[in-house]
Image (cartoon, rainbow, N blue to C red; front, top):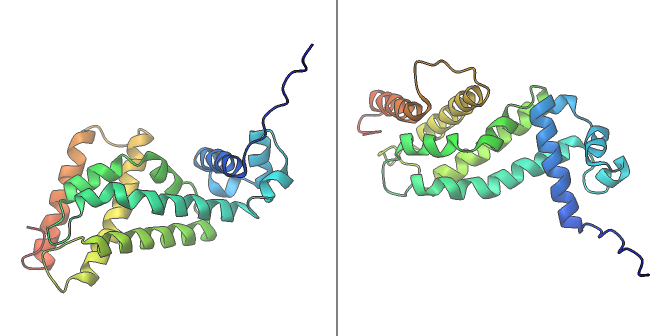
Length: 198
């Protein structure tokens, strides 16, 4: 009789992905500050040394999660940010609203370490979008671009978080929000920067 095959060992890349997926789930369910490496190991049915062999801390796991988001997310948004054209903020907001995992991750912590990493991530995302061509129809509006995009991303993450947790008001439907926010930003830009946001 042939002995049963031994269980297949996970590759290093697969194991790392598994750790990251579980950590992201625990961070969004329990809050970043409430999750330890031991919690992640227990949820995976493995040991702390196994998790530590890939990541030295939960902060390192969070950094990798944000790094992966920053690598993949801008490409999904670039079709709404075209060099030389005025940005369609409504379309950009609608696209960002689809990024549920990122939005929940951005709202999964409140401590100083988490806030610092969240700020770094949003700053890097702003820079990538601005460099790609986020346009306010003014050649010298780069400072305003960064300020507007920073404000927009923070507003949007709050709005998306509320929608996914069912805390948003019922007076405005989900489909209307990106357009309303887009009009709001465009109107503000016209007020602050003549010729912008039109």
